[in-house]
Amino acid sequence: MSSIFPHKSYRFKVSFLFGNIEVEGYFQSIDGLKGGYSTNPYAEGGVAAFSHQLTNRSSFGPLTLKRGLTKDRALFTWCEATFQTMTTVPANILISLLDENKQPIDNWLIVHAIPFNWDVSSFDATQSKIAFETIKLNYQYFTRI
Image (cartoon, rainbow, N blue to C red; front, side, top):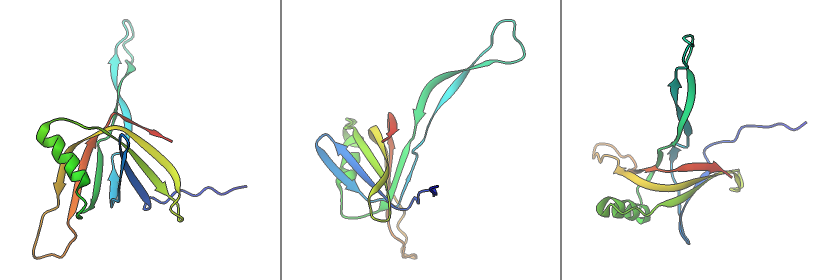
């Protein structure tokens, strides 16, 4: 009988796929890998006890990526180009959960991600904290591969 232990969530890798170009990013946290759908109530004629709940469109995200601010400007440049030109260059994103040997044990492919927010943490001369950048992305859907 094999034991199944839950995966630990602190080892992961993020790869941005822009056509034939791959940009890897190392982040402190990822949030927003979630999906669901809304429902519309439908009241059937002659039935007063309940309403049927019909499915509506699916919704996913948004995805929030947070990391320490570094000299690497590739993702900022992508966000900046989107914000300044209002022209989106979508990316597919591969999030890999890694084992202790840094081998993927689970993967999620985020499809057609576009940035809608970028911010940097506040600067405060009275505290010696790491400066963080946060990128928020909308995406069409994800699949577990």
